[in-house]
Image: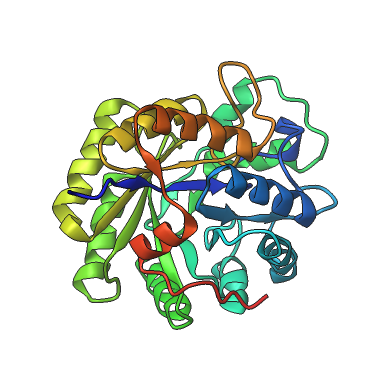
Length: 309
């Protein structure tokens, strides 16, 4: 009898997309981030995607010391896969973005697969009250921002992080990013299994229509075949609908407060765990099994946990 496929749930615990004043539930300090990550893991997330913030005001930070604090607390409580960002924030240098992954050597790191306009400013259509001076200008500035991820940048990340045994979650915001990834596969710098995280709903990338989801899946299948491990995240209100669609198409899913602050129309999610519980309930209601961290390690051919923390 053919073994039932297990769906891998990733959770993006915190990130640079949202600012602290947008939700009182967004974790900021290393302890808050770790605590929220542990809750998501206990709810069923096999992979925890991690950013850090300055504790005093929530500004995005790639300080390896903050990552170290987060990792130590998570590792004391759970064995979920830790997935460090190498994207950090579009305003950071590549050296800043790489610092935590190079110092702490996680088994998994994200890697953005192309330069792009990265428009956060539509979020200002809602009447947010910002507590910190940096928040509104940070979002408004995205009107004139290009998120740099050149071929040279990508190659550097692949080689330097790969030398430490780190494998990658390839974040692909549009069809061109899949072809960029195929370029590195053809050069032998990326080997399967190829963990593609298709990102929907960021202005500057592909949209959130179901046809967009199907188009990205068809393209990824054609380019990577049996080496593909496909996953989907969808920003904002389309999070649940599009990742459910992806799971029905044979994919894996990502939730988390980095991608969406919501847990239903007009209702802020009180935790990352709440979003994991929601999607897990949907998947199990569709008779799908949920992957454990060990299942996910096997699926992604990870080395096992040896984060230098």
